[in-house]
Amino acid sequence: RDYWVVVPAAGTGKRMGADRPKQYLPLMGRPLLSLTLENVLSWPGLAGIVVALSKEDGFFPHLKEAQNPKVHTVIGGAERADSVLAALTYLIGRAVDDTPVLVHDAARPCITRRDIGALLDEGVSPIALLARPASDTVKQSRTLDGAPCAEQTLDRRRIWLAQTPQRAPLHLLYSCLSRALKQGKTVTDEASALEMYGHSPQLVAVQGDNLKVTHPFDLLVAEAILRLRYA
Ligand code: CTP
Ligand code: MG
Image (tube, rainbow, N blue to C red; front, side, top):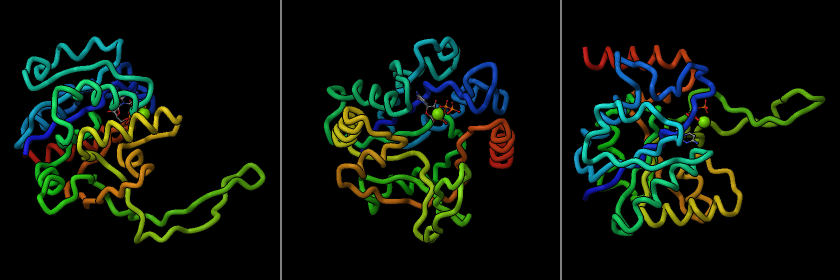
């Protein structure tokens, strides 16, 4: 069945440290966000996209995807969760309550169709996210004499690194996210808001490269991934 995609793209890209938000830096000779949107527009069953943009954004209207009738925009907020909530608010009333919503970071342009297929598979829970099993050993720390020290080692077989897209029915996601924000909780992804109210999102192991462009080096890696894929 048809689903909506929410793309938070209202960040400033502090860690990238460039002259503009990272979603507008060139990748394969095009603005990164343009590649992400082109990718999402190719997914089968897509009803539409809601992109959350910063109030100060002057770049978006120049993207070719800005003209696509499936692409809608809203003004985002101070944190990623505020931007996602603004997009969900836009959808309430425009789509039925149980419409599947996939939230996908603007900063993940390399997501593959195969991984989208896996997340949308009929056998997968309607509340699910793409994630990668941890490959490094994970330490939980505490501060001793001002220095971080390893307190314990977590069981690596149970550690997953959350990625996007993350999916949930529209109304459920809206109510969990708005409740969590009203209660002043820190919400770094959609799954965490769902977990706070008793839901257990299914973890779908990602197969392809789906890195989040965060630091300057990631742009080089993303470019290499896409060149190899489309060569
Ligand atoms: N995002 C957003 N609204 C915010 C903050 C972030 O829509 N207030 C978006 C970003 O544009 C990005 C995604 O959420 O597509 C993931 O966030 P992140 O990688 O942290 O991007 P930035 O916040 O822009 O980067 P930084 O944290 O380095 O400043
Ligand atoms: Mg950020």
